[in-house]
Image 1 (cartoon, rainbow, N blue to C red):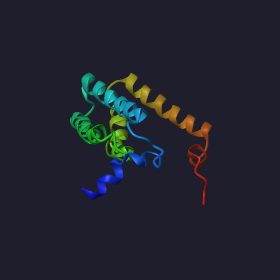
Image 2: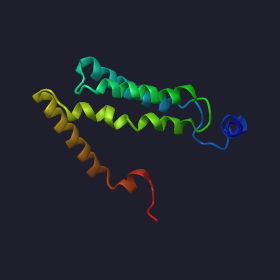
Image 3: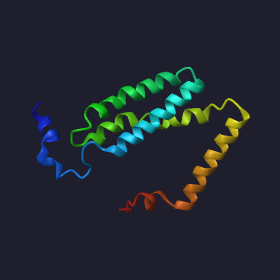
Image 4: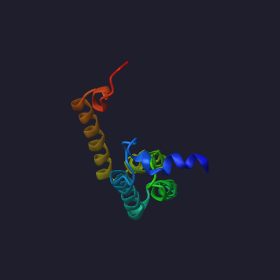
Amino acid sequence: VPGLTNYVDASRNQDYLGGVNRRDFFLFSLAILIVGLFVVRKGAPTPWYPRLVVFYCILNTYFLLFGFINFSDRLAAYSWTLAPLVLATPFAYPKSTLGRLGTVAFLSGVLAIGFVIGPFQQMTGVRPY
């Protein structure tokens, strides 16, 4: 494949700031997988949740197989599109009163952090045009 040489050429490593074999991306993907498997083990909140975790694993395989090439973070984005569903579904379907209180506490914490940190543009460092 002619276009592949741009991605695997070692001389391009200096041009690409992200680097290869990103441990932080691996740990983030692993954390999402552990949460998903833990929820499945404790009892899936919906009938389709175990299949969602399997889809996440399948899409994350692209990143794990090609983590050695430049721009592998773009491959991680395939599985990370499912990460909000994997993480939020257990909160959306609480099974007990304690689970409902945990959901309210989690959402309240997220809102409080949003108010303390400030607007999205300041949080990400992006300047408006």
